[in-house]
Image 1 (cartoon, rainbow, N blue to C red):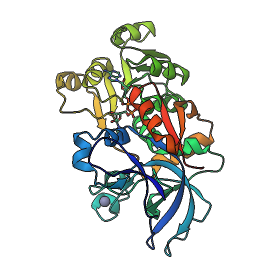
Image 2: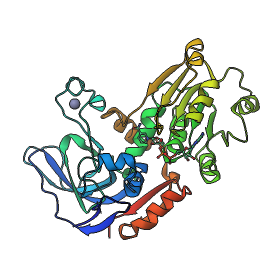
Image 3: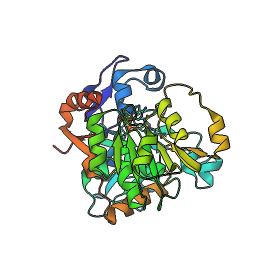
Image 4: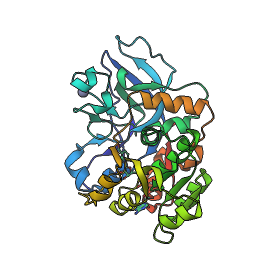
Length: 342
Ligand code: NAD
Ligand code: ZN
């Protein structure tokens, strides 16, 4: 089968013919139809220090996808050929304390699809049945293909109640962008988004941000004044991974404000913890998606009219993957989706 393989320990990815995966008795075989390119895939493509120490070579990569079930193992009773499904990108052990308590997103032995085990930039992928999410009828396949990062956005955005609250989102990458309609759907009042990238600030406005600003040009204090806010933001969603953004966020929160951090900084980040302490700010780290509460909420919000489709700005045929990666690296994109249906 055709697959996008990290076949050499150097920058690049190679479209190659590799054997189709086989399935065990608890597995589901899926024919991949559409796949999203994630920032993680770009790290693997560019072969940065993280990728060098994490990714086995050779291996097919990719973890954001939608596809059709084509075969199930003998123990699989509730998935059927023809089901339209996505895969949860974290394969958990099932045996640790958190897994046994139903908190699989907190498993300490997580394996990443397309990171530690073969991925979804391939004609077929095999996954344990415990990693399959069946889509509700009517969801667009392109949107279904990006449920993994949409799940990051939803997990972060719904970490704290936002009904009637003023929300600050730092970073208008694809995940920050998707968080905008989610918090609006959940009843937020003002949703302010920051980024330095004009393309992404425009996209943030299209997705319903009250204001989308470059924090270098428009300080957040000025934004608060413009919106008639007097006590700071109630909820902060850090989605840039930039320490300056988190610092700025902490300085603009209301007393008792709540912050969820999804963005991953490149290294340790120093912080003025006194602001956190004196202002009694709650900070929560977010990793992945809750299995499967986040997936449930995603499907139900889409059923009830949430539209994240404008975040998909670029589409390419699978064979044109290089154009997809070039577009991602340019920063002039929302989500980039590869079409494997042909
Ligand atoms: P992205 O890199 O496409 O977007 C980040 C955006 O932040 C960019 O548009 C950038 O211009 C902007 N930015 C940089 N510095 C800024 C600043 N000081 N203020 C405001 N904006 C700034 O990333 P993405 O794919 O949207 O993902 C968002 C973040 O979440 C990344 O850090 C990614 O590594 C992380 N992530 C975490 C998890 C998790 O499970 N914790 C999962 C997926 C992604
Ligand atoms: Zn576990």
